[in-house]
Structures are given as structure tokens and as C-alpha cells.
Image 1 (cartoon, rainbow, N blue to C red):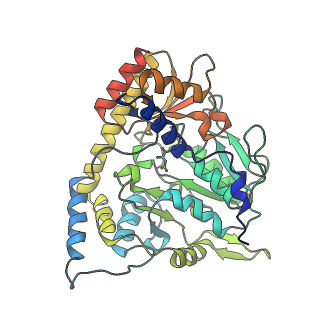
Image 2 (tube, protein in one colour):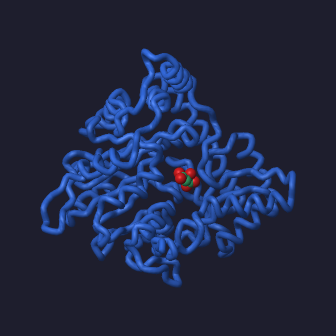
Length: 408
Ligand code: MLT
């Protein structure tokens, strides 16, 4: 008899974004032609940059001739890409990351979930609340939690509430976690962590031998030059942090798929006897066993992102999205909403009015303005009463959506 992994039965609801998609499809079916504008899931709308497309085509051409054809590549990614990333994303910012520390993959969603596998089942996991749902759901799937309590919190997870009162920056937990998920610029609140804030976490992790799982998928959206882009800009972070990066939002790769996970050689975890074990070695074992690498043309396309020309081009697109973010912020504020984020991140976190519940606001916007966003409570209990707008729609759609909300 095949038994299921019963931890899946603890999951309180379906995964957030398909659930929103289902509700929107149902609404569209009942109200065809309603002209729905989607500002829910953070999916990009602008095409790949010209230099990226050229490199992509060139990679495909190479696959067409026997002399340049590529079969299996290195599971960790081609050196040309790992070197370009180490130089452009890290060494140029004073972070001593090498190509060996970088693992190319097809997405940070998978990596932030899969990383749990190399850590002990008894590991205590800390996550922010609200949070990108993948961290919580994969912690449940991995069997590291009990059931969800009435307040929506899973037993066994250490929750770090992020509220307007603490400026959406969590306090250090009293109970010491083994693994700490942090995401900056933050999804969903759009806030950023200043240098001293990151230092606080790095020092805490050093003191307690914890590991920080740092999701930096939105670092390219940081406009403020004082804000670190990588946790490795903080001294000592190479001993306590894994960083997740993605080209999905940075360079429009949501449909193309390419991300990378950084595990410095100096990062150690421990076996039950207290012996040090190199985490990079463990992840390399996992990665080479369960993954066969991202396709060659996609890695060629990704490498173009890290050239001077590619950087200029993707920066222009990011600028476009950030202008959208400013428009959304200003329009909603003009409607009387309290807004957060959207200055160094593509997400705008809005407080609903008169204590309206997040899903009620979702229904109101869908039914009256035909605009889709993401209910804050879908990201965790502390998100109740908030709503997230994504700035990745086209300018035309953003303007139209804001106009409709203004006239609600
Ligand atoms: C989001 O909208 O939070 C993201 O697009 C989801 C993701 O990156 O998987």
C-alpha cells in the first residue's frame, strides 16, 4: 500500500497564486469580457533585452551544428556564467564570492524549497510573517512542523511578525532558530533592510551557529545606494548565509528560467556529533544527483545579462517597472490609502481601509474595478488587512487600473 507524505495534509490551503488564478478564472467565466487587469503574481510583462535575445539565438544556433552542439553540461552551470556572476554580482561589491560558490538552477522558488533537504529534520525554522509562501509551505512539506493552529501559525515554526509598527523589519527571535529565512527587498511588503539591520542578523547567526537563507530575488530593484544588494556585503556573512538570486524579475526570465544559489565554501553546518560539515559540498551532492543543469542557450542568454550592454538594458526595464511602482504608490495614496514599499522593490503594500479583510478587498477590486492584486493574508496572518500590488504590469494597464480604483 502506497502511503502518502502526511505532512502535505497539514497544508492549510492551496498554494496562494494558483488559488488567485482559480478565483479570477471563475469570475471571468461568469463575466466574460470584463477586461481584468492583473497585478497579482509578480510576473514580468516586458520582453527579454536585445543583447540577451541575441545571445539566446546564438546559443540555439550552436545546438544546430555538430561542431558546437552541447549535450549535458556541468550540473552547477557553465563556468562562463558562474564566473560572470561572481564578478558582476559579488566581487564588484566587495564580496569575496567565487564561481565555485555559485550553483545555476531553474528558479529560486525551487531552490528555497529544496535547500531544506540538506538540513536536519529537527531544524527549527524562522520565517517572517507575512512571507513569500514557499518558505512556510516547504517547511511543512519537509515535516519540520506540526499542524496549523487557529491563528494560522504552524506549530514548530518560529514566526517573526513584520508590521507597520516595526517598519516591517522583524525583531531577533527569543527562541533560537537553526535556519532563518530572510527576503530583502521584501516580498510582499516591498521594504528593504539597511546595512545595520543585516549586520544584526549576521552577528546573531554567527553567535548561535544558525544559517540565514537570504532571498535576494529583488536586489536589482534597489534604488537607494546605501542599501546592500547582497548579504555578503556584511562581514562574516560568508560563514552563515546562503543567498538566492534570480533573473526572473531582474531580467525578465520568468518564462525562460534561470536563477542561482550562492553557498560560500566557508559556510559550515554540523552533524549530530557536532562535527563541521561544508554546506556547499552537501548541496553540490544534492544538485549533481537531482538536477542536470539549465539548458545551454538559456545560460548563454543569462551570461549576456552580466555584460555592460546587458546591464544597461535590464536596468532600463527595471526603471520602467519602478516608474510603475511610483505611479501605483502615488495614485493609491491620493485615494487615501496608506502605502508602503514600492521605492526599492516592485511591490506596493497597501493597508485596506476601515479594517476591511484582505480577501474582501480582493473581491471588491475584482468585482468593482476588475483589478487583481494579492490579499495580504495569503502571505501570513500579519498580512491581514493588507493588499499587495505588483508593478510588473504594462504602463497602460497600471494607469487604467489606478483610474478604475480612483473611481471606485
Ligand atoms: C510573487 O508574486 O510573489 C512571485 O512572483 C512569486 C514567485 O516568484 O514565485
